[in-house]
Length: 482
Ligand code: NAD
Image (cartoon, rainbow, N blue to C red; front, top):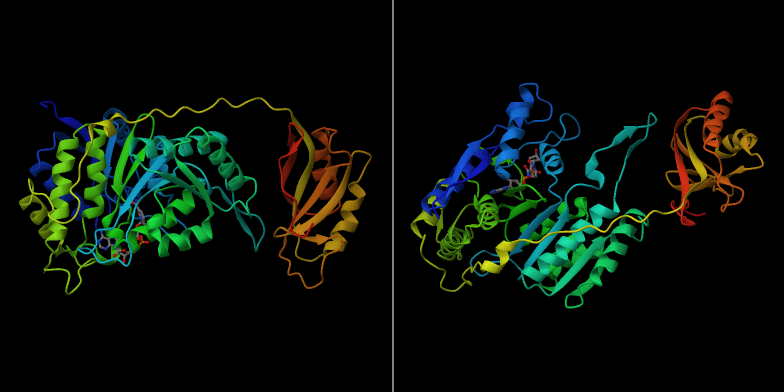
């Protein structure tokens, strides 16, 4: 190979510069044919007044190289700037987040044995960050799940399993509670799964799934799940395997790909030179495969395994009796570089098959046109002084020959009719108006009239949601206790 492949890199925040420096030294020593183009992202950029955390010209670099090796960045908690990671993943269409987790016992202490891959949906879910304060005491977050987004990630997980000779794909969701959003994901998993008869399929509710992942991770092979669950369970899996500092991640799209560690910027240890660079090294290995340099990836991977096998460990995985030498970030990189060309003696050496580099094209089925009918609406109110029956007393006046007030709920629990006096209520009310005959569409003007009449009656309407049927099937859920 003679041409160097241009890639975009960013040193990030916190431990980012330390682990990036270590990773680039290893890539260079191993003969990776890459030319790096640096962009600045994260805190420095936010503080310079660029609220996205990334400058417009940085997109040009990413658009032209299409490959991004990124160190972690700091995202303010509970306010402030939006996550740059989320923005980058979405802006570049990086729909699949692939996070392999492998235990390296007995050389890296772990109570378990595992070799699994988490395939996390990367663009949807609560990570859209669409949040609103609706009343003085209540805020909301919109969870968006699409058919296309779900099909893409689920197909990716099955194609990945096929390409890497994995035997089983497990879907994690919470469709016993979120029947429409998580329900759609599960349904598409079942549909797409039928196209892969050779692969074993199972579904777990996320809570027991996570518990099993922490307790018997050997039971899992490929896990496909929604964005938030995937984020949480990959930290659990990595920590159970030894340290969050060990695992890398690929964010893959149709055009571009971004490679990183799964962990964050670890401000608690930043600048101390003690961070484990393995997560970013593993991200870089996936990048090398992606840019068709698998032999370099294999060389580094084996040197990395040999380093761990020799007991040369950073503080996060150092254990008396197992480790032989405690090193810092730079010392660990030096040890890997010294071992380039060597293979582990006991751990299974890495082999990067040529088949795997081909990648796989993910096609999405066209969306079939369905008959959509407006059959009602939910009127949301801000009210901190009235009881449910008083609100119902006012809203009953909105009933007409087409619609009627069906129920009032508070935080999802039906409180009228037949509510319990013990139920605690906030100031955020949902009042459902339904078509008297659900097979008959109501005109959109009923919604506007509903808002107008409720407002004129002195109620504070904070939003409405339309109720639709699609091909006669309800596109909304009932209230709890309905
Ligand atoms: P974190 O992953 O940064 O740290 C969690 C714990 O793990 C800390 O005790 C840290 O010292 C330790 N740790 C993490 N990486 C390590 C490594 N390589 N070697 C040794 N120990 C390591 O998670 P956090 O503290 O919740 O988040 C810190 C910041 O990172 C936040 O601003 C968060 O938004 C951001 N973050 C960024 C990314 C990303 O850029 N992809 C991902 C997750 C979190």
